[in-house]
Amino acid sequence: MSNTSLKTTAEWRSINWRKLERRVYKLQQRIYRASQRGDIKAYRRLQKMLMNSWSARALAVRRVTQDNQGKKTAGVDGIKSLTPNLRLALIDKLKLGSKASPTRRIWIPKPGKDEKRPLGIPTIKDRALQALVLIALEPEWEARFEPNSYGFRAGRSCHDAIEAIFNCIRYKPKFVLDADISKCFDCINHSALLQKLNTSPTTRRQIRAWLKAEVMDNKQLFPTSEGTPQGGTLSPLLANIALHGMENRIKQAFPKGTIRKVGKYSGYQPGATLIRYADGTPIQA
Image (cartoon, rainbow, N blue to C red):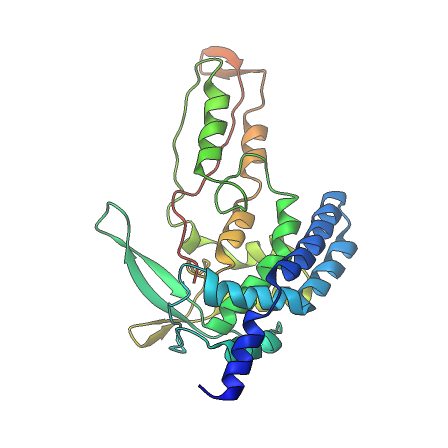
């Protein structure tokens, strides 16, 4: 190994990650509080500041190259890993634009089933950019998300969803409906999602480019007209944003304490509660 490579490796290892995490977390807290207040101008300014900061960009690169489960999965660029000097170079290249590379389609088996589900693996640069956008957008939406949404959210797990169900049915018997959204990731409408996202024009253009990026499957390119690519770092948050509002709609449709008449029968309606949890976590590359 050359002296330059040794020096670069030492530089990467000497980064005070705890200090960077504290800086990013403080900005995320400010974004969260601004979103709670409904101060759009404030949290958009803070998001721009966060995405331009070296700390957030360095953490995004570390996440996709060292921390994530699918860090060794290559996109269409064929790159599986980066050396410390390439990681440092990538930090300086992370800038939002209006273009995205195609995603690489791989098929993985569903647990306990014969069928397979598709994953769209972006390139390392796109994954790092998605991680950066996630760092900025997640606190805004965490301040807005409904209380009984548990899938793909920071600090929430399947056990929290189980506890919510238990607390909902423990005092009196209730009907429980177990429902699953078929091909949820694959059928999300791009226009509706971008309108709901309601973010800055720069971020919107970049997210639209990721949504519309072509898919390479068996050396053939296919256009993408709907859905978010499972395998992208930002996809779980986008899916939660698309599903946001379900709980309130259910409560509006079945208000508690009303008298409902069905045919010749009428009775007291106890209301309905929606507890949402995704049944499988996609591999984040």
